[in-house]
Image 1 (spheres, rainbow, N blue to C red):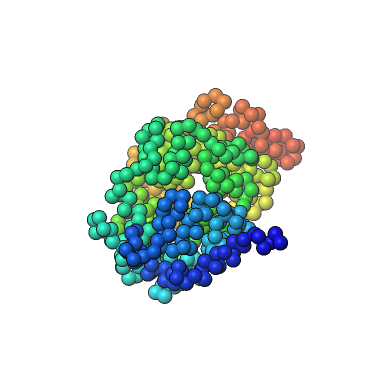
Image 2: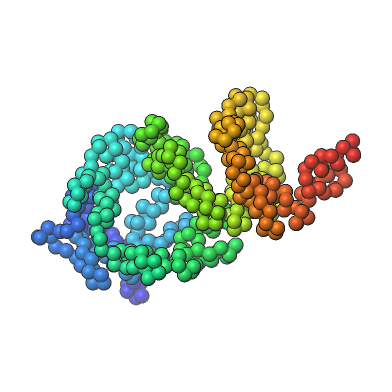
Length: 432
């Protein structure tokens, strides 16, 4: 009796999709031919909440769920919720890596037909979407929609603090938290606060180690979809985005944009504490932990914490003794690939990174970065106990032992502990 009174959302959606008059079988054609305003003879479906117009009943019903907030379909991997079952099916491809749509020109595969349609225009050069204001052409309707905003002057929602204007009230709500310092979502593990639930969800993966986005090519997994997308470029043979400066090709436009900064030395991400600028937001995030002292990556063996997961991975090889990377020249083994890469340059004698002040050369860029502090006097690593500054993090770590009394180097013969490795080495001679 009760079952008959409860609507089945899957059947409801299927019924909508069976209405052939409302469903398109050619999304690319619809995208190209779609207009913001209907033709006079087109029947429109209006939302009773916000009066927005839709050409199809299915479009209206899907939109109405944005007002009700009903999202009955849940992803079993990341627990993200969706209003429609079809949206859930599409979303699940981000976890499975399924790419059923392939380009007939180059063989590249895509998870969504809309992505394939947009990609195909790289080969054809087609730009079917034209701005009625300035005549500029675009490859996709979404790019045109974004461009049209540059012609609009109306901004409905204004911030009383700084006067910045927004088209959507939700954008204003999030923006206001910059002024109030309001953080609605706190991490139960480390207490760090976040203004958005989605940001907290991603952060929690640093504690749980969860990596819900697997690579379908090499079984490597990632905590964020954006990290997976960047990684996939390693497997792609197609690199359709060339740099106009040096001719180097890239698999995705985001990699090309980052590369462009190497020519103009653009560093758009600035630290609010010390003013240092970075080319990537991820580099800024890691740098900010110098000031906050945050170390979200902990070793399960000894409890030692690190600011970066890569540092934790290197540290853990101390416990396992694993050194899987060997030099083909001399056979020396290393616990990480970066160590092997640096070592190989000692065989070639290559030192491609030169100091502009004294012309000293280095095999690795990071060594040059540290060296430059000799000329600039920069000491970015500060002791929170006494305020003393250091040019290297390792020097700060050694210094901190004076405050903590930590003695991490133990003699295997007598058990005596030392604060520095050289002290242990000198002591070891007393046993021989």
